[in-house]
Image 1: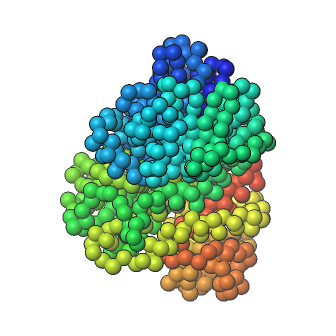
Image 2 (image 1 turned 135 degrees about the vertical axis):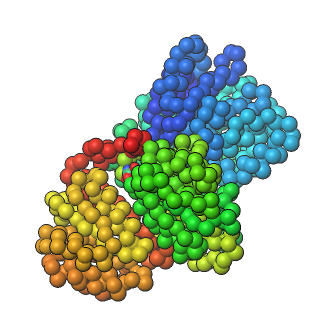
Image 3 (image 1 turned 45 degrees about the vertical axis):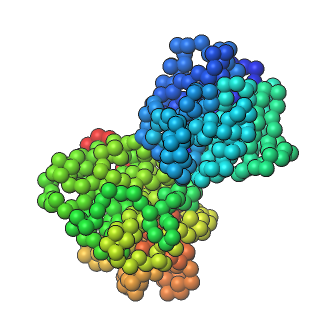
Length: 600
Ligand code: AGP
């Protein structure tokens, strides 16, 4: 997601826009830009990097007379972070400027149409084509031109448009938020309230399909048919800090609850006519083995990727810690494919593993969240997660989006191998956002359980098959934010040592959702129960056997085993969060940790 701010009024626009962007930096921070309407026309200043750099670039010129402007801080979705890809974007003549938050799904087709008509499109972004579409239809009335352009767009947008000749800002919303702030002789527009709150608490939330025409003297809100609407003016009650987290206490909790949307974003445009749609260079006919290399949480999603690629696409798959892979001088063959998984795209060990494989001529594929990151630029092809910025150090929505992307990849390879694609997996994959919402509804139950264990000193997490990596991930979440020691194990493995740890003080989290090993997991629960271990069992609704054995029961929605990790991890994320929060710890910035480990 990106951050948009617009201002029109009696004050100098530039400082207001910059301070507004700073309040939205949590929405994206890889480049920023501003366009001001001045006597000389539309003046554009933009750069790669933080908003503070943009502020410096503005300070060397005098824009104090400009009263109208739009600004943008970017979270790249199409086109890597760079000056040319940063917003605002111009039309061919530099007389129309736009800032955009969202994804234009049909931008390639529109780009071809515009280029054929002679438009000069300079960036790699989907957003720039909106400026040229408005130019195509502009005959003096910017609102009319925008309306005609919007009729051609497929996808999501929050847009603000400025033209050189008209003292107004036109805004439009479909799928990406826009809020209008009503000040005294001034009007602001932004992606989110933090950018507005210093100027006014009176706001109007635009709804999908609505267009706003903002001038210093007032505003009009119209529907897609052009009728003027009488929208309700609301009063903001929150503080700025609360709002950046949308009322959540921590970014991590916000990101846990964003997962229905982030998964939907990962899948958007990638499931069509019961087929996985990916654009990858990889030709599976040339691939005999897949190796997946990653670190931390991404290594856990890699383990699930192995299960998916082998069970769905029947491709031999190995998983390796990147830090081990890079120093073992691995035995690699020309028909290997190395997949690297990384939320940040900057993890030093994973980048080194990638470079190691490339130096041996091995084809590489990335599963990455941050667009334009080092790993995303160095792989031969890849899948962006589109999960949006993940601010909390403990990875949550990136993990579930990684697993969703690996599921898509397994289906895509199955199609390439002309094997039969299991339509149930595809249809249930598309329904995942709903299932995750149901899992999130367990939050009050999880919070109650968490309160019982905030003083525990150890935890065990046990699972089998697809649920074993989920056990590892649940243990890591708890460790890294609550500082309680926790270990994940294949449930059957406890007999080979860890069972010695079981006593009446040991909470044991069992991932016991239905799969082909359900009867086995029951035996493992019995083994722990026989030694007074405390059983916290995650099971499917109505599973009476597990319910009888559990001291604490978490009932998750049913799903296919292949999709269960994405659902089952949600209660574990919440359990770790509520335990850490009940201990008063800094959940978003846990001690000793960094969001991206760019050193060895
Ligand atoms: C996960 O919660 C941790 N923050 C950490 O294990 C992380 O997954 C690991 O450092 C890998 O990061 P990456 O996905 O950005 O490469």
